[in-house]
Image 1 (cartoon, rainbow, N blue to C red):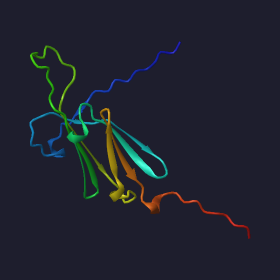
Image 2 (image 1 turned 90 degrees about the horizontal axis):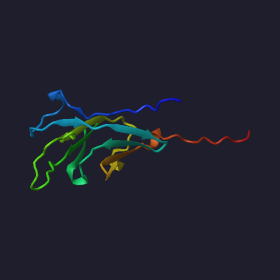
Image 3 (image 1 turned 45 degrees about the vertical axis):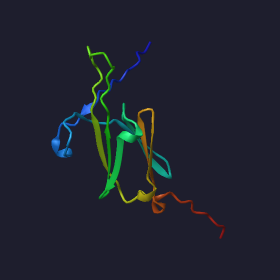
Amino acid sequence: MEKEKTLVHEKTEVKDSSVTERSRDRKTFIPRIDVSENSNELIISADISGASEKDVNISLENNVLTIEASVPEQSVEGHTLAYSEYDVGDYHRSFTLSESIDRPKITAKMNNGVLSVVLPKAEQVKPKRIPVHTA
């Protein structure tokens, strides 16, 4: 019988301060992502646990798409933390976009801690069907 493999993913903290200038003294994590593609668009799905849509900021400047999120600290009133395995902090990730993305049509949505950013392809890079005619 073959053993099932389980992959454990830890949050990766940003160690290089040159990545971003921070005005808050908090840990910053690199969110894990998936990128999927079809003939019309690319979709970036980012794991941003603990953040809501109001905590997320997405910007596009000089061909760089930046995703940032701030996760609020949570505590239970009347309790003190005795043990913690969940590390809270901010998220930061940047992507350089090619000219093949139709920038004005970029959209984003949050669902259960997963941010989906839809990057539509520009018309000139979409696959085109070329009809074949009889001679």
